Image (cartoon, rainbow, N blue to C red):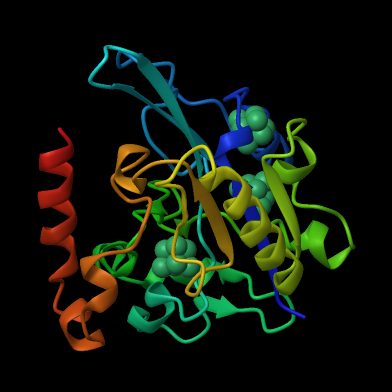
Length: 241
Ligand code: SF4
Ligand code: SF4
Ligand code: SF4
């Protein structure tokens, strides 16, 4: 049975337990970082941070400031655009049993810009030393051993959930109905397309520019291969500042 995550951002306190748990389980090294005016650290996903809690501040018309938290990671798309854009046999796998999209060492033979450009969620990163493209692998080793992904295991607030897709969809729908009573704009992010389903209480773009898929996912494979998705992402980055 395919698996799924349900990430309830309304329960997230930005403790970064998931971010640290991921880094520890994957035995990823420390990297130089810098502050950018928020508590988001490091500033972005990188080859050694496959999970990142994104922070953003918003002020309403009454001057009340809210903090939005978004524990970002690969969405394990059901029809993964990155896999569709792959030109190297065996470099990007879709595990049928779990639904995990897995990058292998053969990604070193891929054109990073093509794979990165195909992802509507701005996820893949290039390891400069190995030339491999990397991202979250759903903790496939743990899941195959009937253990929770480490980011889920590390979350004490119940924001990170993992299980059978049908169960996660039911949990997400029930929680959405409850949250909407207080936050009418609450929604699920691309629940029909991904295995990592986020619940946000406000417009997704206020959490993260790539919280929901737009543009590149609508392009044909031929256009993706032509690299048209990258300029779209760059334009969005420019708008994001
Ligand atoms: Fe691939 Fe991006 Fe989807 Fe992850 S989120 S499976 S990297 S297209
Ligand atoms: Fe990291 Fe594993 Fe969570 Fe993916 S599933 S973000 S690899 S801890
Ligand atoms: Fe949020 Fe849970 Fe991650 Fe803490 S561990 S940052 S509460 S999702």
